[in-house]
Length: 432
Image (cartoon, rainbow, N blue to C red; front, top):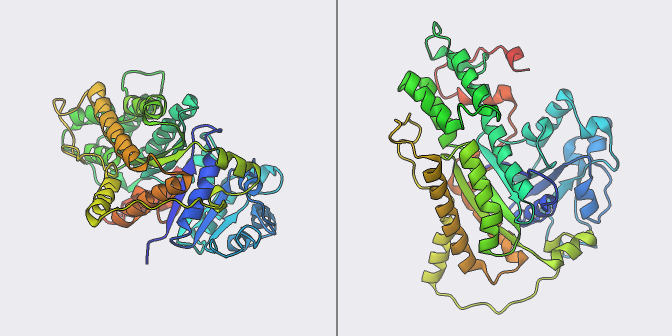
């Protein structure tokens, strides 16, 4: 049985089609297992307004009436799904109107919702997060990957903001690992003030007005020069090296335009201001389609539209195997020299070299995908993104795409050190 996976879908800004993607991606996943879509963009009721079915219970009933979250799942009715082809799909809608404590829930509501999401009876849980970046987005994101980021060639500011989500996740994890409450400091010499050294450096990297430490790669290099081969240095490098970024291009309109107006600015900002060492994967694209727009206007998920039958292309076994191989291209970056180990200054690529390497890999992946998928419609687009996501979930560790649960900081610290002999007598009040 597949490991349960919770996958957030987010975007740096609104207007990129995040909810449209989340709905149809969840539908596509439901062909492979029980899938629940949860609307955490609670200020807009976006999912409720996009699916024209009766909704008896929603997040209002969960928070105000004490209903279990599993009882707040709505399903497609006979009008939208007369043949019950999508019976494995369900969704939890946001409240009908804006309710302050549900839209901007505090720590107690957040903890209650996280635990309820973790307990949902589903193989896949998709979280439609609000656009932008605040605590009610960050706290629902994984610690070791980006979830799925959505951006588009038509909104450059949203593309740049997407890399800020990556930065926020990485800094959250580093601050957690090197917090005063962390068991990490039981592994090093407490007579030296590593906590102050590390956190001062993190402050400087995170401060966009301080150019003394440009990004996390420079941060890791500074530590390596100061400490050499040391648990602090190795932990920072491993955290960066193991982080994975997954993105989908929405409203795709060709390789050149998408690469120059979306992929390149995203990678440029990510490489220069965050890190060049984390893996970056293009899961696919959703082509620009008037049919999707019209379906949205009619409150009908696009995958429920009648699918035009196409003449199947003849393909032999070797062609199919080659296609399967190409699906894997881009799922993993090229192995990094010395991954997880401190690098010497001679081994660290410049920002320009690192960016060129990233751009070359992403452009090659885009071109390869385009050659395979150029004649496909949005039905095939969603299937392709879904297959690549399933491939990752099947063949990589759970923390590479989404995770098996939404971790609280306390749970994540305990998990990080569970496999070591480090005692986890943690003062949780330090993390509040």
